[in-house]
Image 1: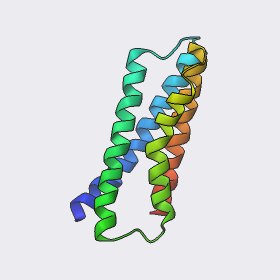
Image 2 (image 1 turned 30 degrees about the vertical axis):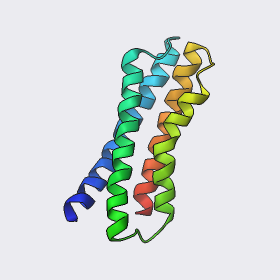
Image 3 (image 1 turned 180 degrees about the vertical axis):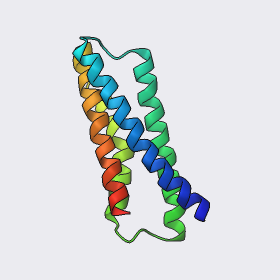
Image 4 (image 1 turned 60 degrees about the horizontal axis):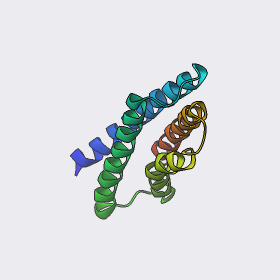
Length: 120
């Protein structure tokens, strides 16, 4: 159980750093008047997959011992759903707008991860 708890905590820290990097990448693409590149889209996909893995680790922990604050679970669900929702909402924007919106969404998701860590 301690291994899963350790993985859950380390993955949370990695998600904060990764979503921050992806968010800054999206904003830089927007400043350069560029749409999302295939590499950027792949980075977003990796972030979403990592968020789902984080949720699975959290579910294993929840079965053994629930967190002291159930708000932690809400942040976990929001973390896993934020980027897919943002990607579906920006589909009709200009390429530059997609990059900027996805960049801000990734930074917002990094903030959700930080809040999840704080409420753990």
